[in-house]
Length: 507
Image 1 (cartoon, one colour):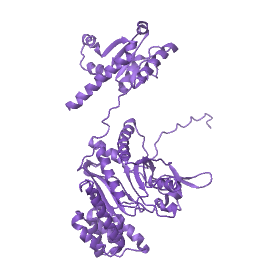
Image 2: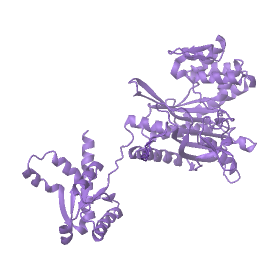
Image 3: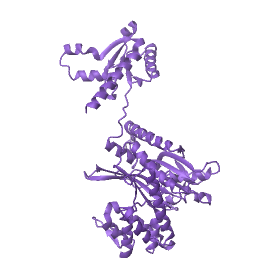
Image 4: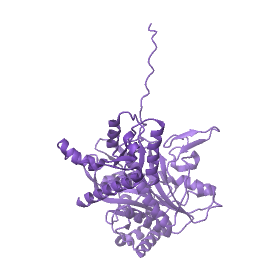
């Protein structure tokens, strides 16, 4: 038997599936994007609110696929009093809980926005993560569809504020009441047909993916895909299918409005929904938002079941190349609608509400494709190098660093092994530092510092062929009095900024 002690097993560093680490560039890009979104929301008179990452599981209500299995679809745990808590699935249910809990203190209509991470306990896949950021805006306590119209206008203004030009996006608007009216008109009204109605909604939602023919199969007996897998259909007859396809196939609402009104004429919900759509169309047109920006489109079916009236979706219309190398339309980056029943679950009284959610990560991908993100430059810090390690010298270097910071210049003192000076310049090069500050004993005795323009030095090093040329190119490094340190660094950084500007204009 081997008595030799086993070496401890090294812990394996691994990222949980469906989660990602975010690097500095992505974090700054998100900050840049959310600042622009926030500015539009504030301009519309919305105020921020923040809710916690965890909610009691029952507060999430119908977001959960199965109330008997609280871990299905959401990440859940039991606290010390054995109550189930879940990481929030979206930002809307927590808002509904917040409004209900603080109803007497909140001024209605309550206009609010919030950004934050949401979590899905679902199988991850390409572009499908278990944690992602949403940015929502909601109006609670406004029953009229003018609130929905305003949401659509704010979505359009937000996309334009982010640099997406007209013609590259559209806000598509539908109304669940119209769809409910169509379903009632074809004989799918009543609680006993709820499951069949849900199957119809799921089929319609596949219109972009499978086209009218594929949706027709899903509305009927079912559809077999290329792999041979069969999806059972909603079981409609041909007449029912034709009426549903007419509804979702409307391209020009103005031309088809009369036929649609005739289709839903016998249903109170359908008639009300058509009137609301017409009202929204008139409002946005009066405000200067033409159909190329906000469009009535009956094919829009938002997936969540709690929508009770208008639904809307922000869609980007430009092409991108997918992972297979195919050109595809970018598609939806957010959406929302009216959810009058959500707050009411807590209140026992009607509380109207409408709002929309932007998928921050997806929209960031779109903006990167357009070259609209990350244009604002982040300058890496000026590096104060360390030549001597005694307390007095370290104090001098730290004082220089603080003087630069106090002047609004990003700066850091080298914190690694200072004894190999070459490693400090390698660090500066890899980090992309624009300037290095050098002061050894000789410079200290003379009351001066050496300031090395690392950007110019790198450029010159590519042109230098011999030692004589190198000596002539010492303009990349200057010696200045300590008192002039900040002013000289500012001068160099300004010259570098001007060079970048000229280079950008030349492209």
